[in-house]
Amino acid sequence: MRKFVVAALGGTLAGALFAVQIAGPLLAQESARTTNVYEQLDLFGDIFERIRAQYVEDVDEGDLIEAAINGMLTSLDPHSSYLSPDDAEDMRVQTRGEFGGLGIEVTQEDGFVKVVSPIDGTPADSAGIEAGDFITHVDGESVLGLTLDQAVEKMRGPVGSEIVITVAREGEDEPFDVTIIRDTIKLTAVRSRTEGSTVVLRVTTFNDQTTPNLEAGFAKQVEALGGMENVNGIVLDLRNNPGGLLTQAITVSDAFLEKGEIVSTRGRNPEDGDRFNATPGDLAEGKPMVVLINGGSASASEIVAGALQDHRRAIVVGTKSFGKGSVQTVMPLRGNGAMRLTTARYYTPSGRSIQALGVSPDIVVEQPRRPAASEEEEESSTRSRRSEADLRGSLNNDSLTEDEIRQIEEDRAKAEEAAKLREDDYQLAYAIDILKGLSALGPKN
Image (spheres, rainbow, N blue to C red):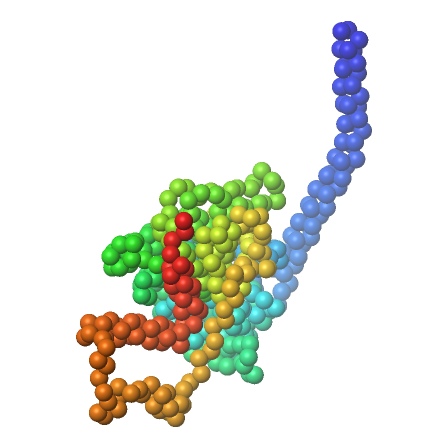
């Protein structure tokens, strides 16, 4: 036993000596790195003083510091930035669901402002701004070379004031101007309605109102249909939804999942990662679901679509989503400002990151542009809808009762309404047709 103890102690001593031999160079490297950082900070101080003393015009020292901080953050990725006290307050207001502006979610690409998506019912949406548009000028001034926050600041202004933005759009030969009147943006997080026996939940953003709005809207539509037994399925419409709060993406996903992982986040250090799991209870009681996405579906929208897709809880229909797979943490700073810093990537339940790749739909369905119909085409369409029953003196149908004829006419009216929906919103009509098909197959045994 004494020999074993001595051997163990000897091993401990050898390990300690080895650690000292290795730690020396490591400490020296760390010391050199720290010295280099302080040298760089001294360089920054020198430049700051020279600008303040020798620039051709007087400069505001606070503005210089803010610009330096913002430059440091924006050099990291498109979503990290410095928020001045005013910007930080605007962001807090936005998460509550009401703010002033045009109603667009934007990012930056190739130096220009790119529209992630217009927000439903806002001035930008009414003016025809589309996901993927590039904003090149604001009131005739180029935004090239500006930071994203600077460009957004140019687009802000008093409610009721006019702004002219120049838009470059794929498929258009030349950029064109769009005039928009600024307004107070009141976000309705979820709009609900029925199409036949299908409940359609249009989620426009993920703010504090989203989950309560979704639950209340769903309950209202189910009641209107006379109960869940009369519901054939749910369409969760996430098109042009730019995202928002991670917590709301989790609770919306949880509303339709009984169990399993919803999303995980992983930061630089493994211990900083989080996993979020569903709790028992499915708002839709297992009814089939279709999720609609497009290139304007980003961030929190992609978390929901990815979770429901991975768990095979919903069929995802539309086009590839935006591909923002990172998490930003807003950190308060002294002076009421804040720092928005990318701190993690998020992963769907299957472990895939959608960063830069987006969520791929199970069924790709493009939304066709609707051409304007000419008067001749409309007249021709009207003529083609005429039938035997429209002819003067045509014979009656003697094989059906009046009730049977009335039922046929009601069914035909529903079919025509569905056909009209295909003209107005082809992707939504496609989703509803899928649910009709699944309903026709009957429940699973």
